[in-house]
Amino acid sequence: MNMSFEQPGWARRTAEAIAQGTLSADALARATLSRIATEDQAIGAFVCTLAARDAAEQARRLQGPLAGVPVAVKDIFDTRGLPTAYGSAIYPARPASTDAAIVSVLRGAGGLAIGKTTTTEFAFLHPTATRNPAAPGRTPGGSSAGSAAAVAAGLVPLAIGTQTAGSVIRPASYCGVVGYKPSVGWLPTEGLKCFSWSLDTVGLFSRDVGDMAWFAQALCGRALAPAARRDAGPLVVGVPDAYPWEAPSGSASQAVARGSRALQAAGIEVRPLALPRWAGAAFEAHVVIQGYEAWRCLGWEIAEHRDGLSAELLAYLEGTRGIAAEAYEDAQNLAAKARAEVPAWLAGVDAVLTPSAPDEAPAGYLSTGPSTFNRLWTLLGLPCISVPGAVGEHGAPMGLQLIGRLGDDARVLAIAERLEQALGAATAAPAA
Image 1 (cartoon, rainbow, N blue to C red):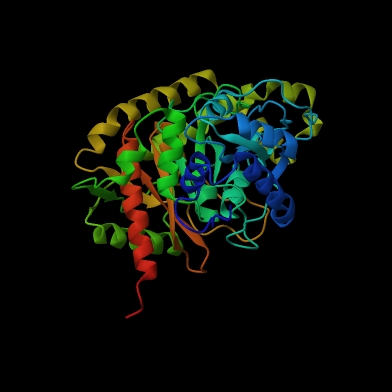
Image 2 (cartoon, rainbow, N blue to C red):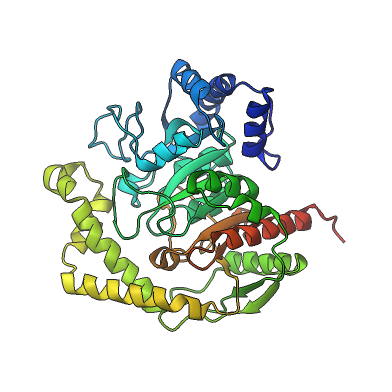
């Protein structure tokens, strides 16, 4: 039952051992809870977990490809038998009576929802108490910080989060794990606490790309794992030379340069790619759409529990209340036109390589870091994955983000696996 989380394929090896009978699902559940109880005191990734007896009982009954593998669920999703507080003191710690759709899908695939991980307040920016196990003294990011940290610390092999701007890719980058935001609509959002109905997206965390492809396939029902393992053939990756929102930091540029060399070493062509002329306007459209919808999604909390909201969230919401319906409609129209133009922009390339975040995780815990390198792709609904293996100028993790065409997730995962392997080979190579 002693499976090292530092070796590739932790989740898959665990499921295989359970299926072969060399590992008991209920014993694994108890051992996982014991490890969380001991090690999470210093990290604060979890807000609650199942009782040991309930976890063992559920694990024995679960069937499916995930075969009782423990999975952490961000506390933005209703999860039957566990409280849902959305990172806010407004909501009482009362167990949910139903499951969010993604939790239901998880259970149907055999995954054990072992506990709830921290979220920033209503998945916005007010930091959680979670610490970054991969970069002590630096933020783990937001708003899926708890899920990213739980996987990074080896408490669970897999976790579920959400992304409205950059809250899967960015924490994955900061914590040195794999974060994957599938094509829009591939994973259900019903039952999560909505912040923006147009932008909220379910995302996933794992320690390596192979586990991610396997996990995503189990939840999406699409053939992702085989495509991620086979030779993908001739591939081309485009690398933007400039961005309309901000210039990459030294750490980001260093990471992308390393990623480009690794892709080339893996036999993948890397070429410059200019961002489309509409990228800057679409980036700003995200701001308008999120703000307009957030004011309406949190209308009850504003009206009934204004004093219970953080000053940071309340100031943001007050700043968005004046967004006119006409401005929102214009932003939605611009977003729709941009989505329609993506295929032409990506003609000739199979994926785009960018930094997962502007820099290493900011020092301290007052900020969750900016989402500037993520929100355009969330607006467009494109599949994105953050691949660990690079570091910044101060030695903290820097993720490399691969973005693909809508629905072309299998190809993005295949490229990500080759990038991951090449980065690992470069790390393992002896110094010249």
